[in-house]
Image (cartoon, rainbow, N blue to C red; front, side, top):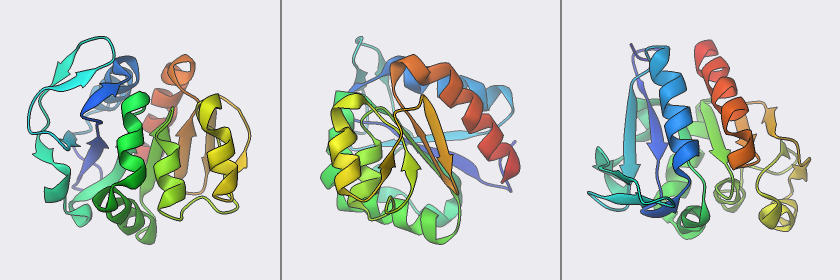
Length: 174
């Protein structure tokens, strides 16, 4: 199954992504029949913080935003690669323009700020990035999960289960 005929796009850091965030989010959506497509900056062996490997379906540069129902950015230290990646920002802006769900957890919400999507939005993320989020105009709440319009953010590893549950709700409405 897909959401309105489209898969959900996961953007996965090439290294140091939080495996539990990726696995729980993917599993929760797939249990509901949602098709997941994984994109990264590497064609194979994206490496998680605990050593797990994922072979992405495609490179981020090949992503066509119109083909997806929404986008999920997986966190971890490696998520900082998205902060300065113009293709990631292009994907985020296109999804936002179309009112699609954009979700980010842990350190990944900073990419939404860089893309200009957080001004006046209630968001959360890893405590280490709260000043960055505020500097991008976000209202940082520190909650485990926040949803403001089409933007869903999660605090990090401790919020993984709740974040995954909210993803299911968000993509059930699309």
